[in-house]
Image (spheres, rainbow, N blue to C red):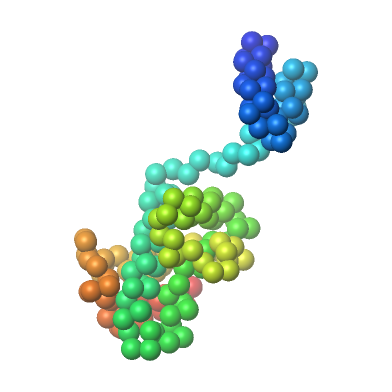
Length: 171
């Protein structure tokens, strides 16, 4: 970053500091003014890696699947019993960077009011990798997912639920 670019960014951080005096922006202003290149990466610590359209679509398919499972399980006699627990979305394993990124997108979707019924009661950290099991479930779910199907009026049958949820138990 040349001196002019540093100056432009410094001015922007000064504006942020005036708008949000408790935001810690003065550190960024000093860092840029003094040209401490080794610390420039800390300017973007607040940003997560971007999530691409394919990964976003994967998360949305997973949430749609779990919403469909929940709607179908709700209509079963006894609400699916113990099988119901395995039909609930459990978040992602946050020790894995990729699953952490997917969890961040879920949180964003929930904050936007989308799929809020799928927010895990115990938070997004499943404390173990989940994506492999979810992909297995999706593979078994997608053949039953007809376009526009309302699972509250056309639920999955018990054998279909067993097939889809059973793949999670096997993973």
